[in-house]
Image (cartoon, rainbow, N blue to C red; front, top):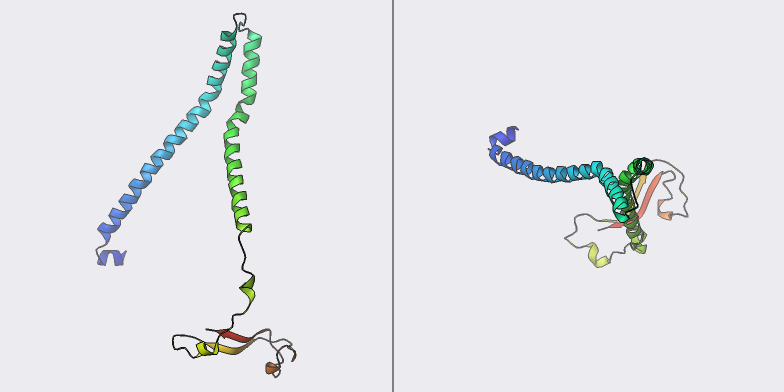
Length: 173
């Protein structure tokens, strides 16, 4: 805060924060509008569904008359199906996320790997004395800790009989 005050950045930061808040409020308004429409449809869809079903039943045939048994059976059916129908949207969203995740995994596993990633790069003797190189280690040997080493692994380091971690013949340029 002291840096901001001494360099007179208060107005710039205030303007940036205000612009960010205005953009956030626009997006928040859109999000809340979508949420409101979703909640309205969630609450009213069973009522509209029952009304359309009963209206269609009566209008299809002149002999179809709404009786108590038909009406209550239909209402009970819609009441029983209300929660599964409302959660169908959530299920579809989760299924879409699952399919998207599976596609990302498939894309990741189909990527090509570099088979030469563990192989050593050879350095030309001409490039060893290049003045542009900041750091060079040629045939470097590093030993850390203690542990048994055999002479057949690297005869140049046979006098160092104990090392936990060894790097030999490292070429870095």
